[in-house]
Image 1: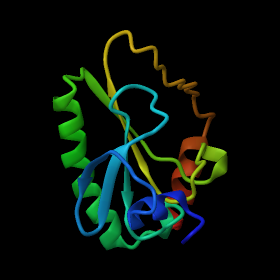
Image 2: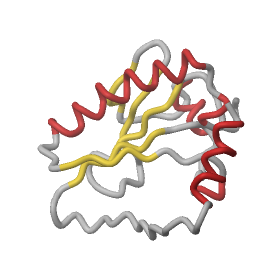
Image 3: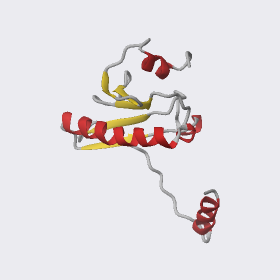
Image 4: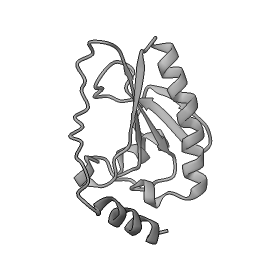
Length: 136
């Protein structure tokens, strides 16, 4: 897709700071990092969301994700690592080519993941569970 910035990176039309590459996956440093080492991992074949990927592409991303995350974590002497993947605009997706953010964490890095946890109301958990199970 010529209008997709990540497809243009895969094609070599736009340079990147390449961290990892194989025949199905590319990982590179984010040009607007939340912290040093913030890496993006993408499938080379265009898919807008996780739901648009083939099982084989998802498996390739999963295998590479573990390798790249380990290298980022170890190479930057991180204390932790966040993996974030957004689907659709409502979830924060801004580039519509599926991608995984790998963010190495250190004490005092200033990054906070807001997590406003809530409790289920009476019977709500079972209702939600049944909706999910019916979708398989």
